[in-house]
Image 1 (cartoon, rainbow, N blue to C red):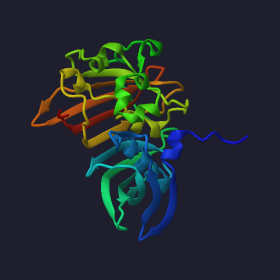
Image 2: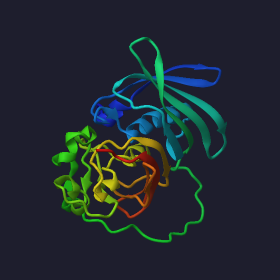
Image 3: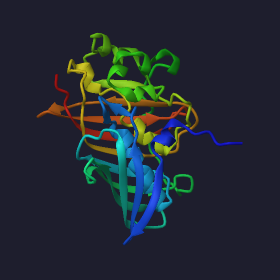
Length: 279
């Protein structure tokens, strides 16, 4: 039986080229439709580079990955380089960069990454201590499909996803922001692709910014830096997502995120530094 090809897998497909002086080179394409106002979503770009890191190391799960975003990224042909730093029994660490080809035969570096990867299916684990459980969120069916809201007019990525937002948290789209910089909802794919650890990198940046609930303009919020920690492999089903911002200062904001699976297990955490939206 032919394996089903999902949109996310097509949009993060890679061609492995040479390994030169230990550096792995990949050809790829930044696909349209995974963008905000024509610029590729930061979580999508992280997932694209993250896939190259996993291919180069043979380790699927990003225990920690930090990306610095150097320039906006429209759709187009690109290449990725992955440079191994260290490989141990449990983790491997690399640096990686994505370069977007230009019309003159050159390339611009778009994002630079430092990642430590492992395999959570064989990880020995260790002691656990939870200070709190999964925050409250409305059931999946009571949240509103993002692709049915005005958010989709500029956040084209929601056409690829089945993300749902808690009604009071996405009421900003009708001019009624909640006044609290919080965004809650459920992450899923429109084509029912299972959510693995690679998809969690996308989920970390797949919701409207929480600051839209502070009466700030619903405009592009460029990511400066994004860090994601994958803590566990998700159980089947959608992933509950919680994002909040505490500080908007000097034109910059931070957004902290948590992602929990259907069993109430924390599967990822994120922190993003971004430019505040301007009208």
